[in-house]
Amino acid sequence: MTRARRTQRHRSDDGGIWVRTGWILGILFYLLMLVMYRAGFHAILPFIVIPPALAVMIAGNSLLGGPRRRENELEPLPVLAMDPLPPVPDPDSGTDGGTGEPPGADGPPAPDGSGAATANGTDARS
Image (cartoon, rainbow, N blue to C red):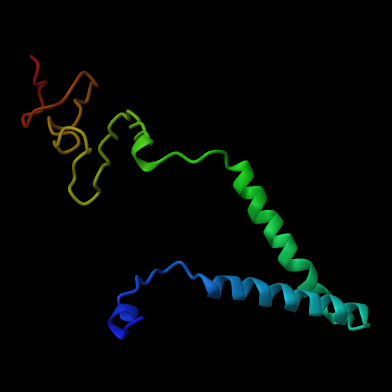
C-alpha cells in the first residue's frame, strides 16, 4: 500500500472504535462499582442506582411519546379567531376612548335633565 493511497481514506464522524471503547470502559467501570459495593463501600450506591434509573426514564419517555412525524408532515397550528379589544380610555387625552370626543362634548346636561344645555342655557334640541 502506497503512502498516497493511505491518505485518501474516507474520514467519517461515526465514532467507530471510540464508541465501542466507551461502552466497554463504561461497563467495566460499572462492574467495578458493583464490586466496591459488595466489598462494603456503601457510599457508591447512588452511582449504581441512578444510571439505570435514568436509562429507564429516557426509554419510557421515548415509548410514551408515540411515533414521530417528519417535519413536512406536521400541520400548522390553527389560528384562533378573536374579537378585537375595545379601546382603552386614556386619562391624559380627555377622551372616553371610543369616539375620540371629550366626555360631555355637547355640553353639560340641562337643569331639567332633558339633554345638553347650550351656552345661553336653553336646550339644544328645541
